[in-house]
Length: 137
View 1 (cartoon, rainbow, N blue to C red):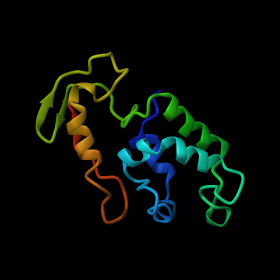
View 2: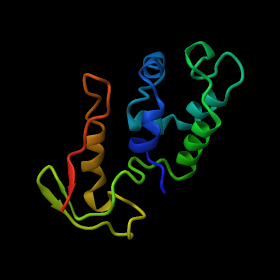
View 3: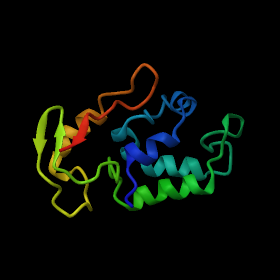
View 4: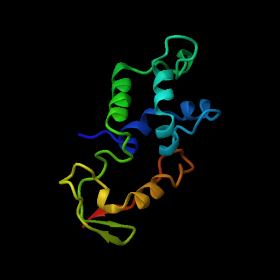
């Protein structure tokens, strides 16, 4: 099963983590984490004072969380991973065709710009990712 930012990576970053790292990047936003993935991984794996998150804030990450993040990087840093089964789908009332690769790239037929625009809409007041209004047709 593919690992994706929205389904697997974003939930690993707690509100306190996002707040602590605003000087560097926004850990709640796909584009920021993707652009800084290797440096984030280096901080997650650090053994000195630069470990993220710090020990006094719930760090370091578990071996499982680190493996998930590393697998996401190795898998090409996908936005959605396996969050969406293949369509056809209705996205905000518009029908999109079935995925091209028999499920290996969910969302491909949706048009990444449309999906990423929804993902990048920003967190809600409760700091949760914005909902994607998809339903299977």
